[in-house]
Length: 305
Length: 307
Image (cartoon, rainbow over all chains, first blue to last red; front, side):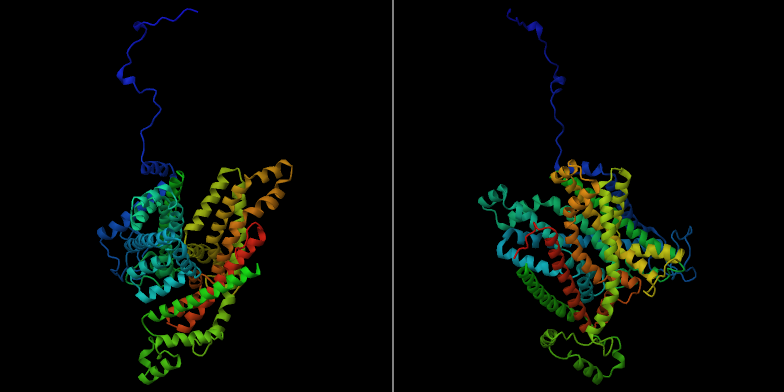
């Protein structure tokens, strides 16, 4: 077998542009981009997001630009059917239903988002402390949670609401004070498993304070499940708010929320069923789209795990 | 087992005690008094007499100890807004109404939920599964009063099949029962479907099928027994929630049950009534949770009750 002869003429220089042609690599994506891409592939979640954004825009802009106000009465034109002047008709005092629903949506959405945010804070602090310090602290804190959990939460929401009066603010407070339990449990479970990991130990060894380890290392790494829990909390806060206002315990007239609008309209259910349908459909759309978004976010975040 | 139950009961009683304490002080923090509404009709002397009659003129802590001592004798006191009626009597009169409705809703939720869950887990047809997912999402995300109102409009107002309010005839049970059970059906469906799907891929199911056991037997005897555990643990709180009543559905359909009684007692500042109802509801929730844990241990012997 003769030896192969090589000489320079057999080779030619590769063009610079073809240099990386065979590299198998994609542009690297951050965690957030990845999650967003997965979220976008979920059609229902996108639909939910679009509906929610439209709802928020309506809630913000309709009361600003409409010629009617939410409490402006027009006793000459009561219980009108939908028309060009009043797109959704008027109620028993001649108030424009579209404007009322949009203002109600403002209150309902504000309560939903704010109380979820307060919940998040309470849950992270409470669950974080219980999970991080463990032992007797954990046992006592979790016993307290068990006790609170064994009472129907609506019962307490009603009582706290009574203590602070029927304002939007006390509604937020009442809902957040009674519904942080799930969040606290979730954060505790995550922190308990994360604190055993090497990076937490490393942080401890270099002398980080407990607070810093908890907030900057543990909670940040538990953000996935926390966000999933948070997205489920917003619809459930809206759920509670509208149910309470609906039985006449929540927001009081002249202020209105979607629940109290449904409550006012239900007295006319036999003669004007359409008036009840509007607020009810709005609540249904909001809670449904929030749930779809929550499911989408959950799937997008959990695919990584 | 006996030791475990005793321990749980002891914890339960402690929980009830703390619950009663918190409720007592929270309730007295509510502004206004039980006699606020008809205050103008009362002379100052009458007002003082009324306050004295219900011990409201004493210091708060003394009221608390008196109440707690009376509670030990099962003495819940007298309702303030319904003059002369004992709280215990009112509760015993209202509870069966709510319990009957709750029991109907419970049976329907469990039966329908498990059936839908089984179909969802086993079907190969995509549209069937999609439909069940749709129903489950709808049920979980819609507040019960929305379902109730839509039902009222279509079946009550437009078609006039079912009466709208009250509980006078058997037909009037239909709408509140559906409204109460939509959410639970969706939850039970989700739980059954996801755990049954898990179980169906386990080795022992494949073994049973490869031996030639017929499908129905495999599902009922081998798969469901293991798949239903999460459903059973969910059933305790569910039954408690349904039997203690839904505040919203009872108010909407004007059903004279526990939930409606509670909301009206809070608005009337009827202190003894609020206390009595809270303790009653709390006790039921605790008992139901214990019951569902025991049933779970019986169904699945692998679960060791921790004592």
